[in-house]
Image 1 (spheres, one colour):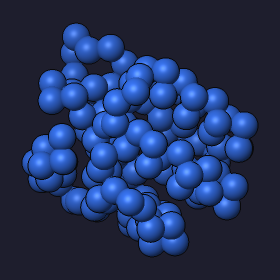
Image 2 (spheres, one colour):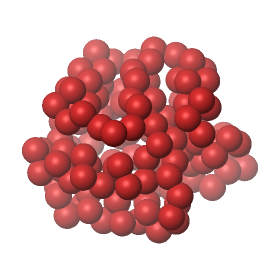
Image 3 (cartoon, helix red, strand yellow):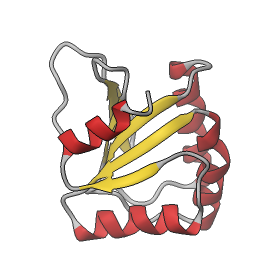
Image 4 (cartoon, rainbow, N blue to C red):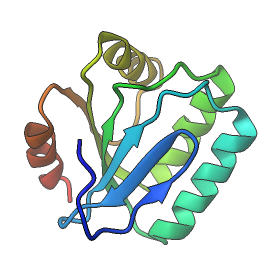
Length: 130
């Protein structure tokens, strides 16, 4: 994914994100060591402040994702349903795909999730959930 010009970008230790013209949250995971529970709580709190009370669709490039701890996965599984409508993931690496599929297989979610090889296909799928 490429960050568009003239858009507000939010940059954290583990990811960078922005809103596209459709209101979809686009996020690129960074190649960093796994986040601890406190860092993850802070990111989720900050993210919720940015999006307010609404639920959002998310397009996440998980190519550089790192494995997360059980505590972080449990927190995400508990918090994400409060602000997520749907998540589409794209990855250019087998490891990124494996980690994303592992998370969503272990913790089934009450919102749709799908892995894609193509960003445009992922966005089209997400638009159905806006």
